[in-house]
Length: 252
Image: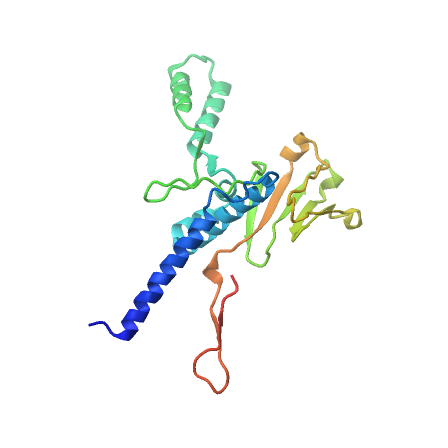
């Protein structure tokens, strides 16, 4: 026969599962932001949802965490889930070197290399779990030459673009914060641009002071807030005359 305590635990567990299922159905609902003019909100929602899920998954999977924080993979995790295949790069370089050295472009070695290159995927999935599920990326769009740095001390992303052809390489900074975008050159902070984003239309457009060529030749760094709770802690606080804590909280 079950004790009253065991029965309470079963009821609490059932209620917890019901609440969790209810929340999941809301979070993953295909009917969110389906009204006209809600496209921007939907983009924000999906990118944020995927990034939060990724951060939480990293706390439970050390291998995933290592891969996300590997500079060679970070950009792919945030964008479309694809990264350049190292084998493809290696084969392409070998082919280029052979073309420079070979006097006979129809050599068997050249043909074999070309065939191997044609049969090698240029881009590969950055992460596939044990069940074969492929990480689709968070959905951001960033230049291929972007370096991603994860920072536990910030809550909003900041993008730095440096080009020797523009302002002598002084970084152009784009800072995001609640309902506000700031964009300015580091050597001219007073010449900054502020753009307010209203809640009804959370989308802002900014024309960069770079040509496409200058952008591709720039050093681009994205400082990205990390929400992986692996460095977080539980705080328990109790009154001086009580044994049980009155406050239990965490900062993630």
